[in-house]
Amino acid sequence: MTNLSARSEQTSSRVQRLVAGLKAWRFYSVLGVFLLVMLGIGWRLTDLLVVDNDFLRQQGDVRTIRMESIDAHRGVVTDRHGEPLAVSTPVQTVWANPSEIDPEHPKLAVLARLLELPEGELRQRLRDYASREFIYLRRKVQPAMAKEALALGLGGIYARQEYRRYYPAGEVTAHVVGFTNIDEEGQEGIELAYNQWLEGEPGAKRVLKDRRGHLIKDLMLVREARPGKDLELSIDLRLQYLAYRELKAVVGAHKARGGTLVMLDVSTGEVLAMVNQGSYNPNDRSQLAVENLRNKAITDLFEPGSTIKPLTIAAALESGQYSANSTIDTSPGYRRFGRFTIRDHRNYGMMDLTKIIVKSSNVGVSKIANDLGGDVLSNLFSRMGLGQATGVGFPGEAVGVLPARPKWRPVEEATLSYGYGLSVNALQLAQAYMVLANGGIRYPVSLLKQEQPPQGQRVLSEKVTFEVRQMLKDAVAKGTGGRAQPGLYAAGGKTGTVHLVGAHGYEDSMYKAIFAGMAPIDDPKIVTVVAVDAPQSGEYYGGEVAAPVFARVMGDALRLLNVKPELEVSDVGASAAATGDRG
Image: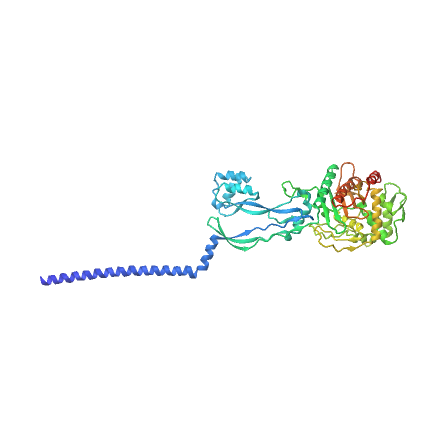
């Protein structure tokens, strides 16, 4: 019994020890696993927080921090008195995140009507770009429209501020100022020529957004937006309006194909007005005709016709071979050059230089040209600015054609003397008349307001230009320019009527009516050139079509500029009653 009891106790003790051993092994095993897990977690935390910290922070920022552009408004374009001609106004652009929108949402029908979009097209775009986070819905709309769109409460519809270019004077200044595209990049006119000056530099900022792209807060300004620089033009908007009004009226009254008017400040070369017909409204280009985009005063060339005769007379006076009293025998009223014949309106017989201008004699001026030679004429025309760029820096400027020949034929000298065989634009012709008006100084033409007096170049003597101005005065008072008298101011100028060139040469029944002149003639302030293309009313001479426009525009312009009237009412009546050839 004693042995059995002792064995039982030994067995029980062994079992207890075995159980205790198993418990200790399990405990240490669990403890070991726990320590290994904790060690792994610790290592991973160390790896995330120390080793991969920069990478993970960058990845987090990519998902939550965005760089947003800050739009910069374009510089303001003004006239010489600060009146705005082109401004950038704040507008809203409505955009969508297609990944957040159900293309079948019923409110999309309301949104489409509000944004004036086809409903089917809107839903299809959301389906097509479902994987994207950004598409435009309507760019640069009125803030009220964007506010209504957001008020619908559609998730994934957003708006951001942008700028839209607006032109307060509309079509009146369209050809000078030009316009921009939807991204405010210059496309025409001054907007294109001075695009880098006018455009601003966008800014940038860091913002915090949630995973759906909603803005939580602005974090940091990275770069401030820099607005574009303003630009002050030489244009006087008051003169521009009246020039546009009168040119549009004459083109309509004579059923003309188009027209051009340029007005220069005699003492500075600044362009005070420059208008064309037809025109366009840069604020609404839905019905824009491409042919109306050109600034014809600069881009379109024409033969100046009889308006060049004063320059031929200036060359004669400068040569010393002629004086104002020199006489030319124009009998029998025509000249033959082989099969080509030059004619006057009638046989004027003996004429002095003044009468040649007053009566616009082709025969008289051609005889002078043959005597002087083509090189003399071409040299003077070049000094006056013909056949070369005006320096105005306008896109698409045409320099024209001024012939220079190794040997001139007599017929070429003759036709050059009265404005055929060369081509100019209206601005070049105005620049040449500016030289006659200011005493012989050629100033660079400018569309920008000049803060300092420009440096000019003398190309003719004061004596010669004074004598030519007196002839131009008589041409208005007694000759072909009788209808160019601007009210209470005495003017001087020259008419021109030239055949237009068609597909098969000169058109027999298509003309350009031109008048170029200055006022007040005894102390000129303004030079103006008027050209009307293909008038169809039965009247087509420069003295009938273009001269009256000159009279109305110059009379109003001089009053606006506070130039003291020179004439009495009785003088105006006498001048209006004067008759002459139509020119």
